[in-house]
Image 1: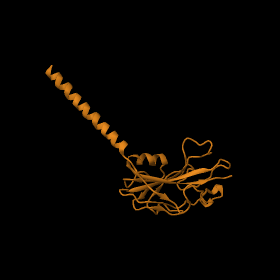
Image 2: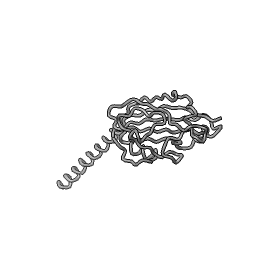
Image 3: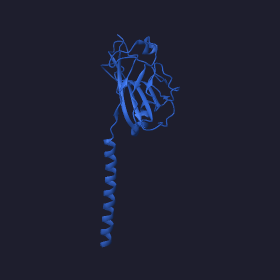
Image 4: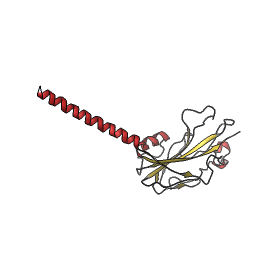
Length: 195
């Protein structure tokens, strides 16, 4: 009887230890807050229309990527930049997931901007696959009459040098690889409309 009591008591102590350990890890994940990154652009003002030169070539644009800058974050070892349009295909009837225009990742810690028409490989980063099926920036090209579309340029700081992904990863793959390493994020939004 005494032996059974010792076994049950030991099992209860181990279970309590494991429960508290799992609970503590879950609480740590919930407490993890990210730093707000200030994102700016010399190419467009926050909430204002993008110039046609940043639009997709099929929409009479030049398909140049706009200049994007951000503040350096202490502890950041790499940065991610994503541009997407939550209003595609129509501002009145958006699809479930935003249309992805640009995916950039593994930008070195010293990075604080992407110049206009930046060469990502020369900056030490990688480009992923956008929803046009390309591995580059592809600008706005909303359907005519679909209303004003918003284009969010998001900057994410991580605490790792590399996401360990090959070039050509999707937005989902990039965000999944970065999930436990986010330390800061911010965005700037521009608009575009074709009447």
